[in-house]
Image (cartoon, rainbow, N blue to C red; front, top):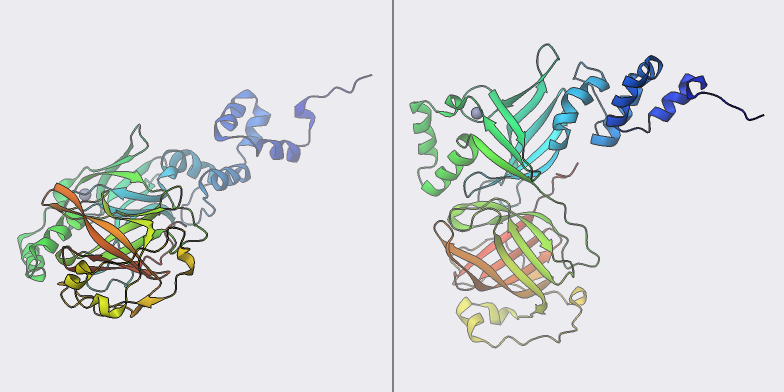
Length: 384
Ligand SMILES: [Zn+2]
């Protein structure tokens, strides 16, 4: 005789184990099917697993709520905000890092260090928080921009997967007259930097955020991809993402933060790795000299991983001279850098050299601009 039994005859711990494999949607449906399933499906250990697997949320300390409530009321709506985003803030843009914090989700703006300290850590400022309302029944969002205490804001998912932040109490962004004067005096020397400060840290009540994708490690690579802080003359330090194309032949520096000339999201420079060059110290005395000499082309099959270290000096006629550039570099390539007028008018690419010093540092020699930019790797782990 065939053995026949109902699934409800199974011991509760086995049913719990089976339900732990169900998705959030299926668990919700199971709850509606019968009381016994409902009792099992509401066990917090099942939701703890869903929190971990769906959102990498592993600790509900500080939330004063069960995993089920955190999942149903917070993560289900806003769990996908965790990660790295590029925010549209005028032409400046912003790098936004969203993480779980104790009892809230926190979005922080990661700003480049103050020029010329390109190897300093990123400066971090809270932009928004997502947390339970006092009665734990709903979620509220706070805007932390402006000059006063956190105030109400909202987050909205757009169809293309981007996220729109909107401050709903914008009066908090109006700064008292006295404070504005203080700020202006701090930035007395540079109106460019004052505008950047005001727009990125105080003004800008609404901003759209697009998710940033991690560039996979390459092996071998003359330098690994990632985020870098680079010097951009009077615009201060900006953040770029160094990326390789699918074949590993082209490297691009994409602006995560930008300026009124070449804004965020635009290409700052592009390098064709099939064009390595070697220069002696004597050939680098001035940009004028570099432009005059006929730089010998290396054979097309040159293994750029095995290039010998070569001399490097910042030419004497460079306007922006980074003082502490290393005296040798790992590799050097023909490259092109993007320039434009105010408001990204008449953009064009101009010739330059991409100079890789080591795993965490490279430079870009803008030949026509007589300028040398230095880029230092962002060492903070922004992907965790
Ligand atoms: Zn606000």
